Length: 438
Image 1 (tube, one colour):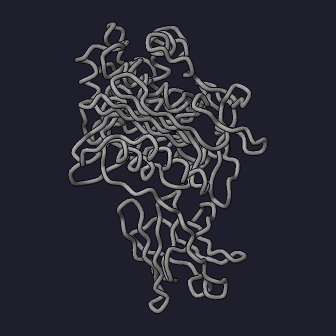
Image 2 (tube, helix red, strand yellow):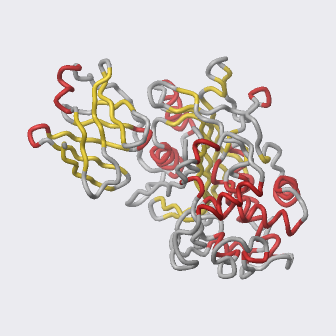
Image 3 (cartoon, one colour):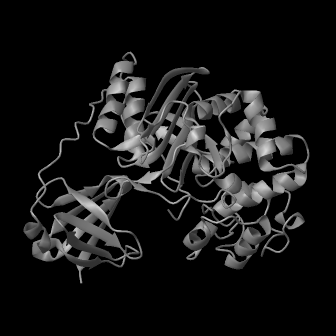
């Protein structure tokens, strides 16, 4: 996988109905996902600091059939940024840093370094290019890299915009914050992680990751492109505090409860982190659920995807960590939160729809494009399956949902073909693209 993902989480509308939380119904949701091979992972729900639900399903190691459990540890990707932001704000509280401290004090070699502040880095307003978007990223992401080498790469990649002129997500920001915190404290990031967060909050299964070790109850990750296939394994020297932390769903909830109940930072500091500017706070953002709102972060690295959010008014924390995603995490969490908060919800039955024969699929084959979508989409038949492939991307199998409609759940993508007019309609993340066959 090329990127450490940022995906804004769940949203739904209308009023929540009052009904008792059914653990049996919650179990049924995750049993249905597991039995239909729609995902693997672990979920935890906390209420007022106590775990009220935990469930794990799938495998930490498919080849050796090692099942996961609620204590299995996963790479949490960009949820690491909330930890990193917390450490930085601890240094601010101690007077060792200021949100207005310029990057030039630590890394003057960056363009605009004297204009870029700690706060701009934390809010993704620095303008520094996101190194995980680099064309050559896939060629070096699985190899160890020194801090100097990575900084040199970031300097070489340059900037995308003038500091503080807008927000644009960049992992480079949080890698630099990691290095700055290490310089200020004369400590390694994992030492600060343990001293400032893990030990005070009782996080026994959270740490800076390394090579995945299944014997240490760590999960490998998989991609659900055509059955579960092993994903890449990013070397953890690469993401640093932008995405290198390993944890459990339960530990993530302990961290959130600890943070939002001011056991790590002062209440005024946490409120400062919660102030949103152009989508981003300091290491967190808002996810709406009906009339409620939660603060936290999403994460993705290799085949891992994760979510960790805290409903401040309800004192409820929810964390979901996954090492294999087919059904979109957004759908899973809407289901889990609907059950927890008492909204009517029907467990998906995942009944397969009869797939068209290969000869019927060939009328959809071709290359489709539009000026409003950055990639061309090639549709072809492989065996008995209809396949799709974006420019420069891996191919993936489409699942029929109707005579002319197909979907690819891992990307939340649907396609409706109109062979008579030589076109298709692609829908993803609330966007709609009409693409013509070339």
